[in-house]
Length: 145
Length: 356
Image 1 (cartoon, each protein chain N blue to C red):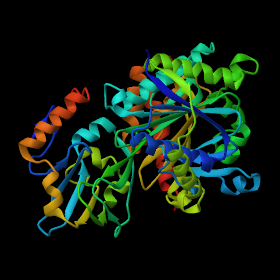
Image 2: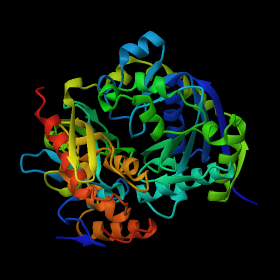
Image 3: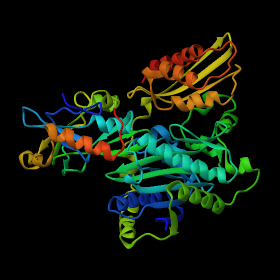
Image 4: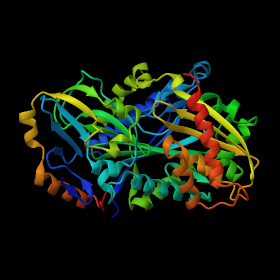
């Protein structure tokens, strides 16, 4: 299991490092999207979650959900284009699940990706992702999770 | 030469126009516009936070009767009432202006500057985490933010003058249950510049003090400018969109999700009464009011505790009360933090037991 400065960054996921989000292609071909542990650490406890509705098409790097922490509202930007096929009801009732388990129960949306093979090439994974997160944390003066 | 940032004063406007300007300027900041300080004022308006529900937060009927605008912000935080007596300030910034990406730290930094602005007016203001600006425990302004990509919007209000009675009619706080003296109780928790100064402080003086404080805090000079042509076009579009029912009611949820519960206990240290507003599906304390005839010094400890409990998850109640008194020791004679937790816990249990 990968980690950068104490933040868990699983090496098997695909990341858009700038937007601090991950994507995972599931066995059935759908894609799960979530926030990274680093994003959660910067945000603090997430207290509200409004996902885009199931069925909605969203372009890569556009908002698939809005979250709130410490009175800040911000988007979760999907790393790949596609249609939302599921939102997380457990997170809707307990948004803090995103902080507790960002790569598991705290997933943000599930999508039917329109071009996973093409778009996922621009995402970082494995050691490249760890390096890119370390550089981002350095630039952002981040001490650690 | 110091870097120059833009100063915008968009004057007195409707809620929808102000919300549309927020969205316009945040989008413009994301497209690389110059960092901007905006001052704004409101016609009588009830504003809810981005994730809030109008039916749960506001007495909509009263707002309609009184011609009070109702809108939803793009920023977080709670519902508020504002009118011509308050000044809004907003910063639209590139996130990299700060040497940290920690959102709480950024909010704290901006609030500290706003506090310096009020101090220039001779007001002994302080920042109360997470988002209040207070004077001797009484709130004089609230703040909240939004971000998108590398652009940040952080905003706050300064109560120059304030109509507490009207606020109590607009916001759905259980005033009748809180205490017989709801207005007096609200006044203990809120103050204004005019009240503190014992006279009228001109709005221009407040804006000038804040401008100087933000200028000093960021090491920049402000130059008064207008919206760009591109911003005017965006604004024309968003002012319609954000005046629509679709925008305001997008997050509406049933009023029944929010329950109130109260408890009263005679403790060795005196009578303690707790009244809670609880968001049950989300298992969160929305607001807590604690009153009674117990002794506490400093007096503000109780309102500060109320602030610490705002929006906290129900299961963390004992922990938050304990942490609060560890950080802010208070003399309470025979009353203990555990007593307070017990009374609040009882109120919470009652709120959860209300049939929905």
